Amino acid sequence: MPSIPFHPRTGLYVITCIDPRVDPAAFLGLRLGDAIVQRDIGGRVTPAVARDVAYIAHLVRSKTPEGPWFEVAIVHHTDCGSALLADDDLRNDFAARIGASERDLADTAVLDPASTARTDVERLRAAPGIPDEVAIAGYVYDLATGVVAEAPRVS
Ligand SMILES: [Zn+2]
Image 1 (cartoon, rainbow, N blue to C red):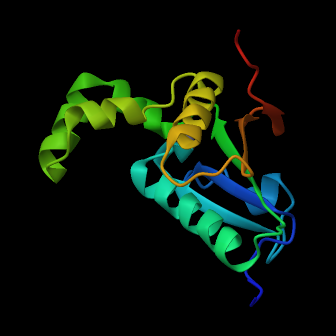
Image 2 (tube, rainbow, N blue to C red):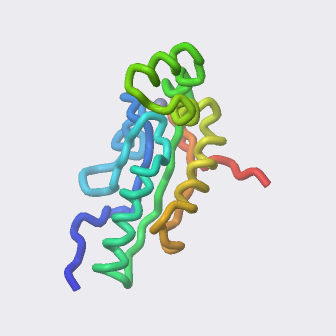
């Protein structure tokens, strides 16, 4: 079996926001080759993001079924600009400008990063092609303190 040399050295797949203050190389101390990093507005798990994670999982299963597997860290942050999408006027204008679903845009807003991180852990867990071997956890990066903490679970 061929190996997959692009497997992240730390076994980490980070999904986070495009905000320039939220660079995983900086706040996680990552170096080249350490992690797969995927960024979008808010660090939200969209169908496109879930498909990319499923692709990496498929490669591991197909090419190196004995592992190593990887962990997905969904990192949402405080003071996220996606929260502006909760503003009805701004969101409606943007939806009209790009021909997008106003409802999907409303769902993108990160107002409570612990809550949306938990939601996206569930979304990714439920997405097609994500095997149980892939660990998934949600985190909050606090811009004020520089601390990354696991999003507390609610029972
Ligand atoms: Zn953000």
